[in-house]
Length: 395
Image 1: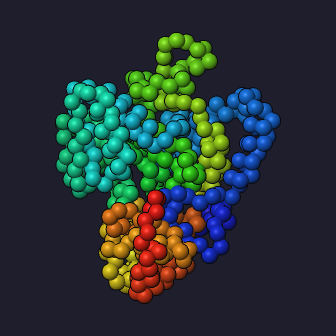
Image 2: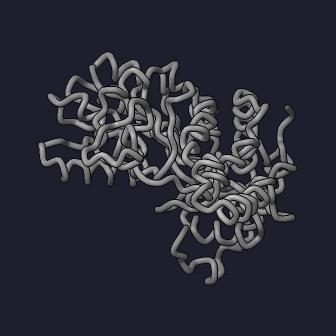
Image 3: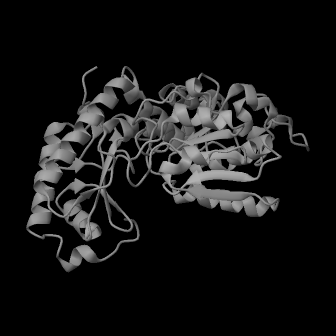
């Protein structure tokens, strides 16, 4: 299948959308599918929809669709809740597996929410656990026999720097640690082989490269051989082995279903299920090849034409996810000036201009047009307009 697949997405005329690493665009078909779900399922079937329309089966069905994009076998991924909740579940389960160890290892490039969830879990447990945060380049050396769980985001949300999943997982296992990967900036962006690397857990969101829409449910993977030993920290009704037996005591489901918590968000999951159909027939190797080429072109053009911007992403495409970040003193204002001209990226404090490259709907012509606008913003100091300096709630 040739890339890009622009006809598969609703993209406003004239807009160059380089923010799919934050929120993916609306895939064609989602509107109609959601409308039918509201009218023909919820409207016509009401409570019968749980059986007639198999709403109860969505977490497993959609989980398998996501699983195929991260190299996970069927039946090992389930959907629901937010990424933060899934981090909490996986991390607590990992700590249970290593009760004699107290160190959770992460790096300073991890997304803050992951670190916050670890801090909250440590406080709740009150057992003397430590969250040890090191620089990204020091993670491998920091995986020692003290570490209970290595909790690492594969692709850095600010810089796009990418950890070697196979090598890091192997080191964790050599040191007796549990490996937990956050794939928020990996799923749908880079090839992932979670089964092949043998990691115990992986979590991720679906509203970025998987285009599931704002608030789309998160996913959690647990290696099948360890599932029977997991005692879920969040023992929700739908993680029970027989929810409709209404037993007074919790009895976890036999498979990955035990990592379910509450009622599936049916409409959000319906949108995601339709969105994931875009990936039918798409080879992640082709996506990766196109992504590296687009990012390389962008870097080369920006460095040649936009003085004052400093590349902070890895120059080597093999060490980078599907985004490019530049540091610029007036990065927030410059990004607002770009957005006002329909080139959509985003800003991350303190000075990072972040651009995502999704080959499903971005091509080389888009890259060149985006650079032309960026050059004008920087060279002509178009960012130096007071309107672009007013901080919005979401950057």
